Image (tube, rainbow, N blue to C red; front, top):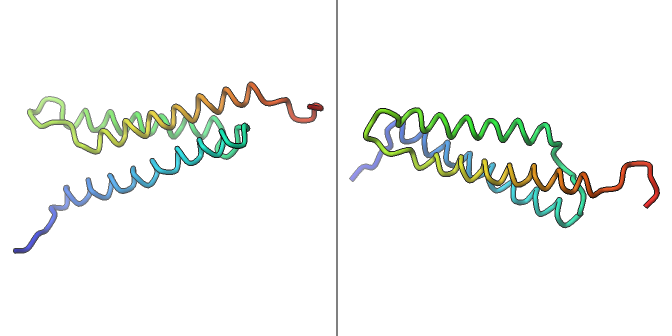
Amino acid sequence: MEMTLSPMRLAECLEALMLICFGVAWPLNLLSMLRGRRPQGKGLTFTIIIWCGYVAGAMAKIAVSAGTDAPVSPVFWLYLLNTFTVGLNAWFYRRLQNASPAIGHAT
């Protein structure tokens, strides 16, 4: 029995793999920030831009299923999870940035 994926299904699987790979990076970055107690790694502007991209991706999945009886794509939930973890990174970044002493000042 031959099993093949349609091009659309293959594209969705590859999109899911991309989101999983990116999704693993955000909790690792968050752990690094929390362990070092410093907002390090990615800047806040970069993080917010990525967050907006994930929100747009999630909204695109909703738009594709809107007006049809088809359920939202399972990939939507990966976008939602990544949106949450990137938002958490931004929140902790701001908290740690506000708690860190200014550069050049004695601690």
